[in-house]
Length: 505
Image (tube, rainbow, N blue to C red):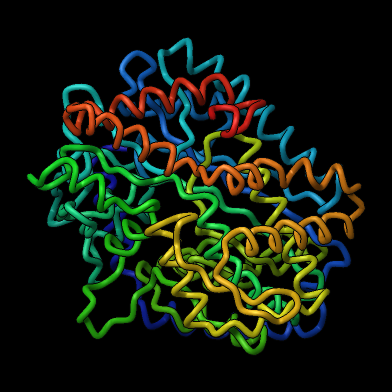
C-alpha cells in the first residue's frame, strides 16, 4: 500500500463518528453482560494459549532487518507494529499434560521451518525483549522517528501498513510519543518507538466467567515476582543514549525497560488531565466491573466496524475498544462461536524470552498459579493493591534484586526472594498436578525458572554483566552493547527450538 493510499484510509478512520461508536459499544456492553450472566462464557475446562513476538536481524551483522511481507506469509507469522516485527499465536489448548506439550510443539513446528527459510535470506528470527542494533547504515533514532506526511496525515516510514497503528499518530489523544528512561530521551511524531520492544503474552481461560475477578486479583499479585524472573531488556540501541559517562549509563540501567517504553510512548504526559492507558490495572469486584472498565476506557481510534458470522461480532465495537485497553494484565471476552465463547486473563508484563522452552515455562507457571492460588485461598490475595503495584515496578528496575513484598501460605509477610520463589513454584506445581500432570512433568516446566532463581541469573542480568565487564575493560559502550547482542543472538540460534536460557550459563 502506498503512503498516499494509507493516508486516505487513516483519514477515513479519523472521520468516524466517535460518539456514535461509543454509544454502540455501550449497547454491546449490556448484551455482553447478559451473556456472561447466562453462562455463555463459562467453560468446564481451563484453556491456555500464548502470543509470541519476535524481530528480524541480519544474520551477518545482527543489525535489525525489515521482514519481507511475502516471507512472513510463507513462514506462518503475522505482521506486527514495525516492518521488522512478527508475531505468532498458539491455538488454545486444555491445561493438561498434552495441552502443554501441544503448545510447545506448535511453537517448534512453526519456528524450525521458519528458521530454515529465513536463514536462506541471511535473516535471523530473534526473540528478545528489545533490539539494540539498528539496520546497517541507519541509526536507531532515524529508524524510529522517520515519517512522511500526506495531506496532513503522518505516516511512519518503518511501520507496517496496519491503518490502526498509523491512525494513532493522527488523533487528538495526547500520547507523548517519547522515550523517557535513565540517560535516554527521544521524541517522535508516531508510535514507532514502541517497536523497540517485543513480548510473550500467556492467556489463561477461567472456567466460570463471574469468578474472573478472583483470578485477576491473584494475577496482579504474581505480576511483580514473575516479571522479576523474566526481565530481558536492560539496554537501548547505543545511539539513543545521552552523552553521559558509559559506566554511569550501565549502572543506572533498569532490568526491564520495556515497561517504561510502552508507558512513555503511549500515555499522556504525567501532568495531563487524561488518564494513562498503559498502566497497572485495578482489582475488580465483579465481572461486570471488568467489562465496564473496558467499555469506559477511551477508544483512541474509533473505526467503522465490519462484522461477519462470528458469535462475538455481536460485540464488535466492544472488542475494538479492547484493542487499546493497554493494561499490564487485562480481561478478555471473546469467542468465534457461542460454544467457544470464553473469559480469560491476558498476562502482558513479560518480555520475549531467549527460547521456546522458557516461554512455555512462563505459560505453564502462570496457568498453574491461576489454578492453585484461588483453589487454596492463598493469603497473598490480601496483599494491598498498592504494594502489588510497587512490586511490579520494582521488578522492572531491579529484577530478582528488587524489594518485593509477599504474604506466604501461612500468612507471614516476607521480602525474601527465595521464599517467594519457592511459594510460586510450589503452588504452580500444585496447580499443574491438579490438571493431571505428574510431579516430574510439572517440575519439568518449572525447572527453567527455578534455575534462574537459584543462580540469581535472568536474561537481563546476563546481558548487564557482559556489558559491565566490557566497560570495565575499557570497551566503548556501543561496542559493549553490540558485542553482548552478538553473543545473545549466537546463543539463541543454538537453543531457541529445544534448549533453555540456563544452557547459556
